[in-house]
Image (cartoon, rainbow over all chains, first blue to last red; front, side):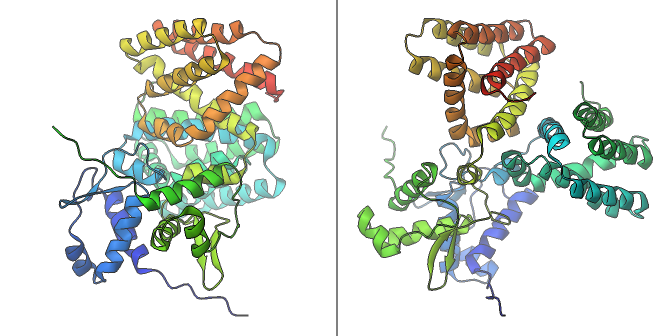
Length: 232
Length: 232
């Protein structure tokens, strides 16, 4: 059977470009966007596509259109009809410490719930990831496995709200996991100590011991905390 | 000086109506929306306004337009350009237990951070709210003060990421606080025990004792947990 081919919509691509400029920090809160004509020219798209994209961003409350003055990135998102949380996060320029505090609390809760709700097949999968982490030959590969490990654990919590929040902030989280690994390794901790922590987590999950799972996850975050020299 | 008058946009109102039908459960995941003509007629707006609203919902990944078949509420939100987290939550029909687990972890972290970061003026404000809670003459008034109390505490954490997440899920949280109060009071706990817990929180915040603040908040959640008979 054939499956319908999805043609990417032009306004979607315009929005993606704006979004990636927000992510990179090129566009900030309160900034004025280029005029529709300028954007259409530099993106090589029709002005209609630019207008559709801007309209959509206006509807979700990210862009404010000021009569005669152009389009601006909003400075506050209160009362926006749909809150684009990940973009709010990107525009907020939060500190790594804030990210740390949010991630610690969400992941500890995930680990705690996973201790009860994880399936045998998920434990098997975590074990496979762990084995591959031991064998990984580059930091890039290790990082990718590390991220996979944490997502799988989050899924095993079986709490869709928690998973949704983690998914929404995933773009930032990936950056955070990367930065944390670098920092931990830079601070003289060996790759082995990071691996050991993940192994302790899997061991505790295998016997479904909530206290041990939580302790292992706390140990994980204590390592990050120490590397960043955050107070406990 | 005059301030510019903001006329509510028609497409905004169309979206608001769709959103409120999602909130009430009338519209669910996978549902087909009425045709643009039908919607325009029943809302007494132009088809252009309906089209603008649908387009915006398509951009944020909430609605999927199927060639010749109409507009559908998406069943999954992966890879949506802008994730409308609160709507995702509403469509997910999460259990109160899931909401409990998310709220517990976020609020404990807020309380912990607030112990360090709360300002004197915020403690004063919490005290005023607490006094008014003691004097409240109706459950409606108590509920409103209870919600205010928790938001102020969240703000005092000074972690914008945490505050953002709580704000986004606030519509659900308000319902949760309401349901929890009813349940706690119904289970034979007196209004006084609820008040006492909030008072303990304020006392612990006044001396900025992190451990005591966390214990007081945990006591709060233990009461909810017991009322709902959730396992610890």
